[in-house]
Length: 214
Ligand SMILES: [Zn+2]
Image (tube, rainbow, N blue to C red; front, side, top):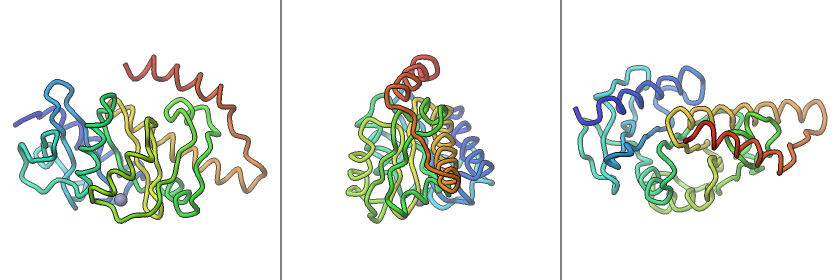
């Protein structure tokens, strides 16, 4: 089986996404790029992650054509392949429906960085992309443009997406995003949240980049 180890890792992290409430059942999608070959391992369309195995993960070439796999790849394949072409530093793309981050995309309010953990993984406030039907090349362009060189973007009226240098760093970023959104929402009920100063966010993010992503 082509890229058996990486496909196994993608299946394992897809299960972790469900277990840690980043998505439910078959929601969201996840991919990882093999650094040596450039091939992309992506979750199949519409399959319950609790049941997923390495063989269910689809292998794509850089243009999104299926190199090996028995299922249809995720409907968000155009977005995953576009991000890998645009961002050489990115080796994992994770789309979640985590509740508090999604709520920020319903009120169209960019998420400020209020936690040190979020500063480490995300490196700056998280932008909101305008609503558009997902799964198209146009949507992929919209998300790539809104993400820029950041690690996270919230999709208006839909969910969130993070990118990382590995499955582990993207998974950390997804939780840093959700935790930051949840704590911000709770803090708003207690008083006025105080964001971390931008220079402190940059310092923390630089430390994380140097120690955890290389
Ligand atoms: Zn979605």
